[in-house]
Image (cartoon, rainbow, N blue to C red; front, side, top):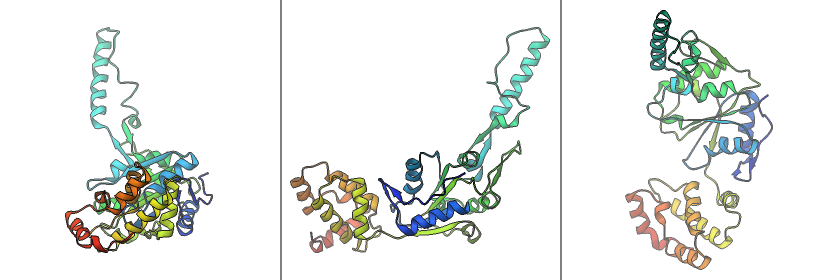
Amino acid sequence: MANTSMWTGSDKYLCDAELAQAFHMSRVLGMPLLMEGEPGTGKTELPIQFAKDNNIELFVYPVGSKSTVEQFVAKFDHVKYLRDSQIEVLNAQRDEKGLDKKLSTGGRSTEQLDDYVMMGPGAKAYSKPNSVLLIDEIDKAPREFPNDLLYALSHRKFILPESGKEISVSEEDMPAIVITSNREQELPTAFKGRCIYHYISFPSPEMMLEIVHKHYPSADAEIVQKAIQLFYQVRHLGLERAPSTRELLNWLKYLNTFKKDKSLAKLVAMDGMGVLVKTQADMKILERNRAQLKL
């Protein structure tokens, strides 16, 4: 049976009560958890850290603009099948000539179509109860991709191409499925109806401090406090792309490579702003408002 115990995070991941409840509901009901929110708020990390914390196998499908359900579920290797068919014909001809040495198909047989099916992360996860499946950034996919997933999510099964083999899983044994979206495009209503939904709000400064402590427990308290203070001031400058949690952690990682005095000097000088601000237009906004930023 799948792991349906309440998970409240780990030493590397802070999971607030609302997120923990949504993730718990999705696993109890055997439904995917659809998470939306700003980039860098920990959507992708949740299934990764859950799998790691519980020693569960993780399958990942990073969605792109050309993603198809065939890539996600399974593909039939027509080239390998054709080659093996030719080898079988050649071996039959060798038998007729009394030749003992035969060409190898690697143990595959064209009589067994499953030998030529390359399973994708979806089929692999459904074949392994108590696993974790991450479908990352589904909003990047073509419109038909989430629609094509409706059958599998509703009936808890995939039909493998060519062979017609069915891979199904019970509600109790469904893998923990997490689907992330940055809302680059709206997802179909019917698709959302098959999911448990949760929006990750951007962390408050207090929660951000807890997140930082999980990643850098030995970091100097003054450096962390000042970095978080400056980080939130930068976020409120009206940038085109406000910095995310991931970028704050990267900045602190950089600052932690120096001794405290030098780190503080870099903070005051706002050294390394390229890790927080990622466009030329935002850099200009930062420069115009630099005098207003206080530590």
